[in-house]
Length: 284
Image (cartoon, rainbow, N blue to C red; front, top):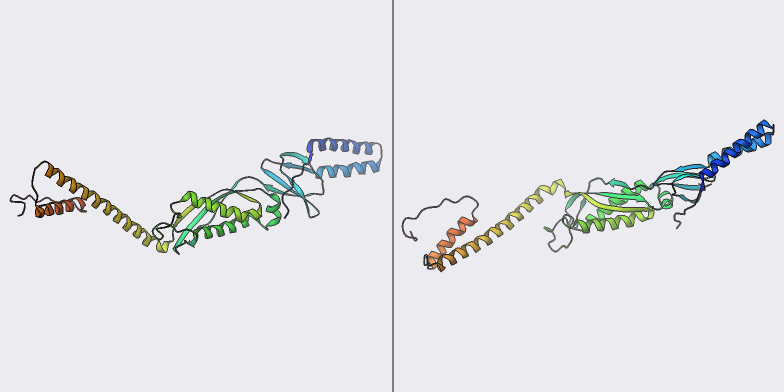
């Protein structure tokens, strides 16, 4: 497989000197009535003018001679090349590409919406021009394909796969690294270098988003309840131990059970509790 070949063009300012000399030779032929010299000078002037090229920073020129690849110029400035070379300009600047939101299934089969941002630039001009038909379109299609493969390789979160070490919604560094490797591998044939690749949007598809939100809310409520009960048990234990150590009151098993029940209701309840003052014994 061919790759990019660099060539060193002639300094354009030297060509300007040759152009001025040719113009002087043309006038000499006209003044001295030497038509052959004048025609020769005119042809030479046309060839010199056609050979000038100007290359801006972060740009390149791909050169062909009658369909044969001759090389690429990446230097900046004014140059002169073979006037019969055909030239294709190519930008070497870094560019952004944001994919459309695509609906794919994650590893567990849940439909999700995902899009990515890709920062890329052309690295090999020969591959970009001659190995693919349209490298910008090639980037779009291959990026979408890489996103679909990535989404199908990992679960969205830990709710469906509790044993998963990497998920799309939590391990962003690992997911972005995997995406960058996948896209880079696909775009190598087009001579494209991936500078950065990251997920720009990630969410459940609308048809299951509400159900997944309720599931997450339920899990959050269960986790919160677990913490509340755990804290309430510790507070009850401390209260009973403190009352016993200070000999404030002596509890038998029935009184202790009643005390624990009341404290758990007070500490674990959702609504504000309203105390009832007992003016009799504790058992009444």
